[in-house]
Length: 186
Length: 139
Image 1 (cartoon, each protein chain N blue to C red):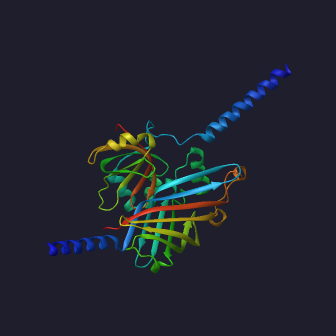
Image 2 (cartoon, rainbow over the protein chains, first blue to last red):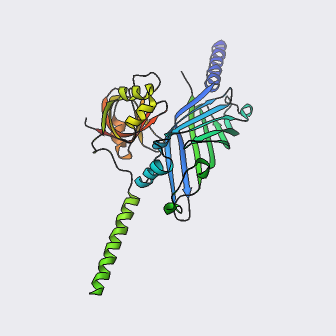
């Protein structure tokens, strides 16, 4: 009876710790939202098909999104976004490649909320820029949730807004990331 | 006489503004009843992208695609909509179709292994071929 209990406990412990200690985490349903707010107009666009991988050993984190998969409420805005601003025929993707700078402080085997800093390169509209963002990682037995919020300046990525709509689109776009990662199983 | 002219001009301007507002506020159209520019199987769509992404982009982006394939997955998204996964012939990637909100109930009832045809917009290739604005069609 005691041996059975101990064996069960050992197996249960192994299973949970293995479940938590994964080298890589992955999602292909990462959620990225762009927000623009001016005194005249407010709008957002959501992309729920972001591809992202975290390597917990190296701290490497990558994310790719397809520009055409951003969904707007208004058709005309979605068209202008793709054809005029992002020129998504020429530049179909936005890619981020970076590293979690304080990876040693994040324990992917211990459930909890961890603050993180991420340094990397964001490539959008054909322009690559170094960016540093704050993020939080919420670790649980189910997986890892990563959330981050930062501002992207249209000028930084050569995104031109015509004079006619200058008052409707902010030069500073708030970008929100909300990814739910699962362990990467080959 | 002058009053009539002014009234006429005001009416024309009002109509112009109304038309402008209509187009400005028009939501994204459903592709359900539109004729597809290209009909393709999910396997071919995936193979075209995985072997030559740049070429596939010029062929498939900005067009209404009707893709036919066997359903390998039905997922409910966080926003309440449904994404259907179609057979790609590849072990890792698939063709994902984010269904329009109005298609939610219908799409959720589809069972794995069923052959379906879907109208949608192809947005490109990451690990899967990603289609959005999708709706089930007859064939």
